Image (cartoon, rainbow, N blue to C red; front, side, top):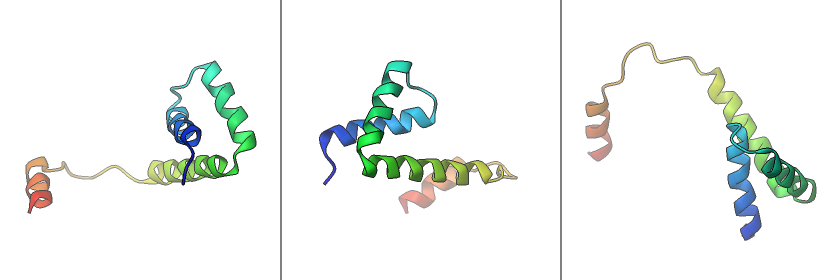
Length: 74
């Protein structure tokens, strides 16, 4: 089970991956990551997912949102 402070810091890891943390929050996150190997691994995992997504190519054709919505609901 993930501790409450780890839940908070995992949210911070996601925000940091989008460069949305201020300097104070980054410092706090870095201090937590020094103590918590589980959150450190979570950060590595998030970074790997982002790298994989960055390597995907753009879709060649437009997406039919209505057809996609119908398919999800069926």
